[in-house]
Image (spheres, rainbow, N blue to C red):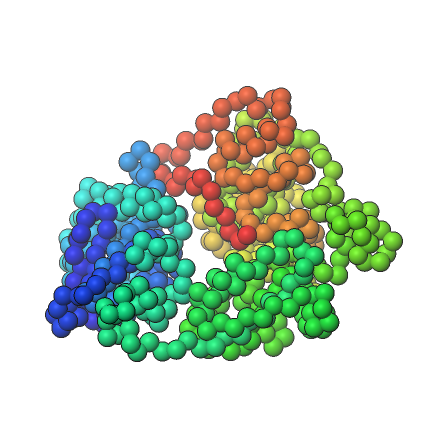
Length: 531
């Protein structure tokens, strides 16, 4: 691995440039500015770190590269999305740049190999990278590290960078792929033709990637162009074809997928050659095998064979129109208003969803538990009875455990004790330790691993799918009015808008104080998983 010289431009940014290229090439004719805003334990932040390194190697001092961290600071306490260990990782990396600028990237890339172990893998990587670990730790543990990280957080906030990674090229938000050639191609396009570095002249042509989009002109929410454009950024050689269900070709194609998880539209179907493109790694976790295709899991909600609930037409030919058809019972336009009801739709392992659930501790307290509150989950079910969730099988398993807790411990929302206990370490497999305050872990285990739990999950996720809800968290007030929000005051305000005069609406919610010695990340103002 080649070495880099890292020059500290300011406490808010870390400037990296290739020292070998600097020595060989002299002063660059033009510099392209590239800014990364990341989190040290974010897999996608790690991905772009690894993608940009060989580009910096090739372009050297023709790139001004700045690396910032994303996080929060409140009352002098630094926090980050993935918890305390991520803050420690941020501190170690930002201090490494200050203490060991020539070997900083060697340390980072070593730690990135097992980013979930950050900061515990620091000592081994400090030895491998041959850096002064003691000096870096001294900085990270002291005021110097806090000042550096605070300034870095400020730099990200100034650019409104809340998602990792957020990337800018010459001040413009970057939307392209994250492989070496993707970064090289996009950065090279930013130079004036006469100033392009030599490395820009030998970029491989992108591979052809075939995409078929099956949609339906009757579907109001089947907006496909933004996703197609996003895929073009990831796959520069993308060739797309749109097919409407209303055509003979569309119906023929639908027949090949209707018995699969792709039965809901729009469906984005890639030919298998997509796996040969380097960009596939970026979207692999959202791909499903559907016959001879790879389907991009985008949360399609429209069933072209079902009744459309607001067009005054008997679409299914059963003599029932719109809301009179049983298939429309969960559609928002057909739902009856139920005063003082509050539904939350989440993915159990979504960080935004867990924060919304945590906020309910203060909301329920304000209303003295006197509201009709329900938690619902966002997932899909295949025709053969398998469940798919955005965060994989562990999320499905956790959804089911929480539903079992709801069934057996509904009084005074006792099941929320289990959920609130789980949320700080929601990905941990050690769920039994949260079966407390009278919640029987054996009862949860029996329910969640058997047919009982599967049936609960199957029925529950039909609600979100019927309402075409795919973003975690999403709220529904009074069984009818959809809204978004994460903080307790926002939830209270939206609920009270539909329930004026409800006792508890007059109370100003003061968020529960953190436990002594802890400094949890403040809830973000917005954001969601899925969409």
